[in-house]
Image 1 (cartoon, chains in turn green, yellow):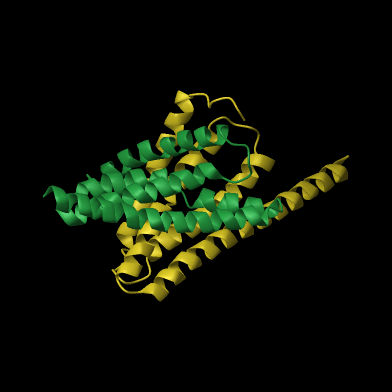
Image 2 (cartoon, rainbow over the protein chains, first blue to last red; image 1 turned 90 degrees about the vertical axis):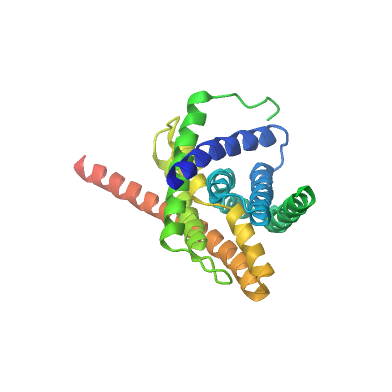
Length: 127
Length: 147
């Protein structure tokens, strides 16, 4: 049952990452991988919110498995983030690589914190 | 760069299937090696670094070696390895270590995963490219001997 939830979440999250990445790419021409940054920050925000709400409201564990492990896990990617950063360095765009790393880590962490805090506050306010 | 992306159903389904498989593999590893609160999440670390290594090898093969195939990179690269590795769990686990009062460990996990992942991509690209060059040279020599 748990495995099925992960499979379903992953089946939806990965194509959504591709669609968002293509969409962001088509709107900008710079070397910075904004598409991957967008999905990684968005996924960190959603995961923070789901786990924060689950913790605050005592949601059943299947919600975090489906949305967190499956969907957010597949929506975000560490391998493409690493690959795009190394390719920037190889192309001599060391500054862009550095910006990509700092922005991804800082915004990803902020999103995880913010998502958790907002969801927990909302749950407390509603209940 | 200006035209909107084409909706491609078969490619999206291929990515979905790969993403489901990669996510299941990540889940299985986290299941086998669960991380205790306040400790380094080794399962995610291992998944992310091994995924970086695999993507480095795959990208050289896809770009330089294998003939162009419509579904190979979407399935293996975007789907399986994208679903296998995760940035959101990496961010949330760093948050948990910080909240649990382990700022040193949080920093070590955050930067350690980053450095190990980047190193894995670089090693994979470098070694695979070198192997490709050597193999091609050996093939040429072999053909030359035969002629």
